[in-house]
Image (cartoon, rainbow, N blue to C red; front, top):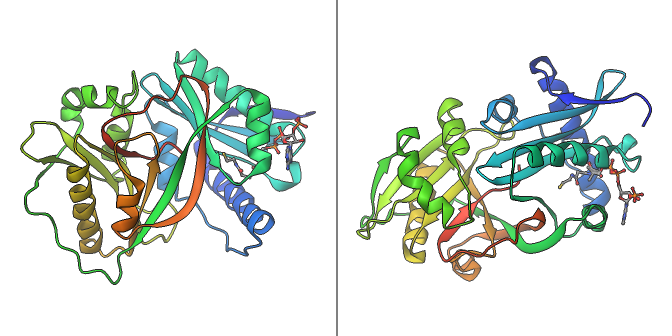
Length: 308
Ligand SMILES: CC(C)(COP(=O)(O)OP(=O)(O)OC[C@H]1O[C@@H](n2cnc3c(N)ncnc32)[C@H](O)[C@@H]1OP(=O)(O)O)[C@@H](O)C(=O)NCCC(=O)NCCS
């Protein structure tokens, strides 16, 4: 498109980006679901953490210096993913989305990622057609789950011993990540959580010697949000994972938050039925679309958020 320029997001453009993203999603909810929602702003902290995350990149598309689209890339070892990804409604269907995906995929390929892709709304025919035409292949579903914790009286499972972890623990945790997907390395998430004070990281001893661990994001991803987000949970046994979830729910309540979000991917050793029985409600379904890599299943009980 004439006059289109794509380059890295500048620090002084963060608020303009947040406004552009809020307009896109307000329009999306109205068109796709008939829902009128207020402008929901990603927090500055969220964008700043993306900008400086190890192996990450924020690209923006501009016309006449105005931001009209953006795409954010993440690399977790040899896994390269993109999202959030938006184009302003009045500029959609003019090829700008494709230009941004080209940019992101070039970046991920140059970063030598052997697993690449994204997650998109399973009910969006436009998005699924768009990515399929580009060459991405649909894999399993990823469910957005939410638990309302305002009314719940939880109790922590006392058989788990929790201790705080940080970047010094990365070498010990890395082998567990590699069992989820070959070459997967979440150190960028550990570092970002620590550097930007996004939340808490804990390890749980269930007597097996496996380093069961989690990242609980307690910061406001969306301005004014009163919920926590379980960014990552890795456990060897489902029973331990469910006890860790209960532990996070109690922690969320202790912090005065109202609920907890998590993303559940089908190819893991956790059963969705057990999460629903634990009081989680289904908020939406995403489909994982991959360019490179097969999308391996894992026996580990694993929860992680691969979309922005
Ligand atoms: C998804 C999004 C970023 C795509 O950006 P875009 O600039 O519209 O994308 P492009 O113009 O490059 O391509 C859109 C393609 O979808 C096609 N398309 C549009 N509506 C369609 C539909 N209902 N079914 C099938 N194809 C459709 C267009 O014809 C075009 O294909 P073509 O290039 O072969 O003609 C943009 O629509 C958006 O911001 N949506 C809201 C937020 C969102 O969904 N983000 C992505 C989350 S993963």
